[in-house]
Image (tube, rainbow, N blue to C red):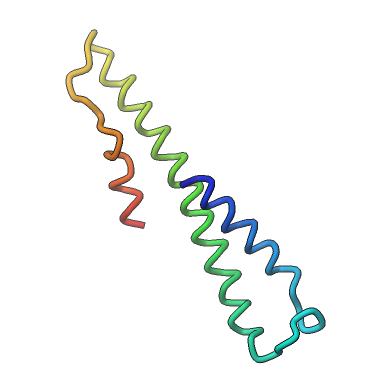
Length: 86
């Protein structure tokens, strides 16, 4: 997920280089501007959200092991349930 988010942000940076001089069809310029916003917002949410989910999972594992043993298992998909709400 983090890799997909980073790729989306990099594509947004590529679209930042396009302007009226480099865009052959001026009618598509508003669509490109909107795509920049969606790529940056979606890419940042995916990259940051997946890294945060991994950190949260490690936090839950170490907090749960304070009693000497892990009382509740943390599944591999549990942190991504919150990420899917984005």
